Length: 93
Image (cartoon, rainbow, N blue to C red; front, top):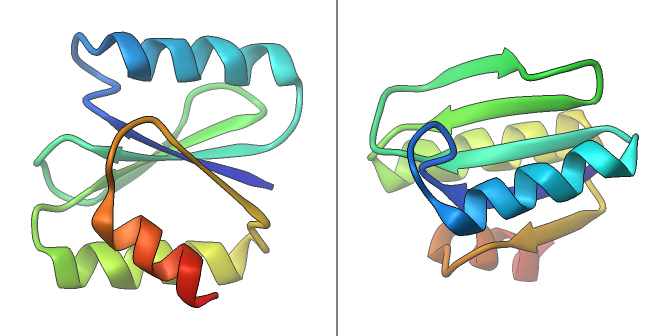
């Protein structure tokens, strides 16, 4: 599985929309970690794409990212921006 890190997937973000368009054409399981300063929420976009809205708290972000990375055996992180928590966890793992 691949994890994408994006900002404001549910709003207007050119990079996030580009990542979503790329993911739709890949036809494989992809998990989006969406930084949008809301509360934690997990939902399906389609049969291949799941989206997780991350909370503002960086500690909880780290726990959520780590949990789903291990749960889904994520092997690749794809960043559309600078995500300190995700980059640290990716380098650590």
